[in-house]
Image (cartoon, rainbow, N blue to C red):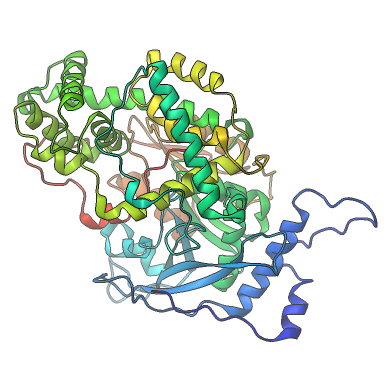
Length: 554
């Protein structure tokens, strides 16, 4: 898939690089003789070394041999980064990078040639999301203006895909379907999940080796600066969605003078005390509200789905289906946990609502096929799913301290589940390996920039987003001086850039193409809610589905 990145063999150049920071950066301060180095000083200097090396090497883009039947002129390459930035001359890992060059074509005026503005680097979130297909968004109408002016750059972050992939268990055992999903688990069930979490954490250490602690958000931000240099960019233009906004904010804090433009789409709350335990609790509470939105929509369309005219009746029918699946899994592979996961995805993207509602309706009428098709485990993608989950776990566990006493988890999630049962315990079980994590933890960086330190950045947020609750966007704006927030009111889709809302896209285009922003805050009316359907036609294009990263949980 990836053409090899060029590595400079000029010894004198590399020796010089050891003492240089990338263009636009301040060199690390020298410590007084015998004095301890400032926290992170070695990593900052290591980033400068790696970036200078990457700038000299560049990226040898070529044919994407491992990506079959891909439309467009997408090219592939690699960039080398240190596993440990404190030791930039030590072990290197290669990140896969993809590109579609700027088209220079104005979609509204075929005779006008558009000036290239550089490279736009994208991360879809996760942690564990793979951005390698991002350059294909240029084929979509909503992205053609941006694609005319920018090389669209996607990449697989460290640990993801072929970028030094992480693994915590045998992919063949990753899908444990059908599974239970009790909203109020028994003590015996909790003990089972504790044992599973301990085994998973131990598996991460065993399968991923001593470098496991190097898979964290600060290193993701440092990798971004090396990628910037390898692309030949003096300053970075970056768009991050969900978790991508968090390490994008880390980048803005670490390297503010390297930033050209940054878009934070569905912003994570970056406050250090929120990373990551509190953010996950807040997320579970927000999903309850979004689940209510979905049930209200189903109830308004009872003439189509016959699942009830009230939220309570829809809930009754959902609970009924879950109980039936616990007794007899649909197709032998869809139990309550698989049902819950399918409906959780509808909490991220409301264009899934018609398909999910139709599947639930059909199942309760005796036809399990649509539900099996939508909720059954995609065993052919087991390796990719296991890898994504391993990266998610490693990054979140490495980033910050977590409670190590299950009594704390039990207390907090039991209280929350009384008012927000839909997602609370499922979210807890996903993150519980962090209670038993085998590596040392980091202290989260205090994301913050002062007046004039950072160019104006653009934050996009949907008011009812559950995966990254709206308070996170407000906190991100408070911490990044001079940033601008655009809100899609009364909407809950996770990731709104380049979507169906023309107002949001107008602000995005104005910012990326012209550097224009509103003053501090602006808002857009919500996009049109999905129409009910009795068929199983998807309401997203296959291309848009392929461009989604792992549903971000952090």
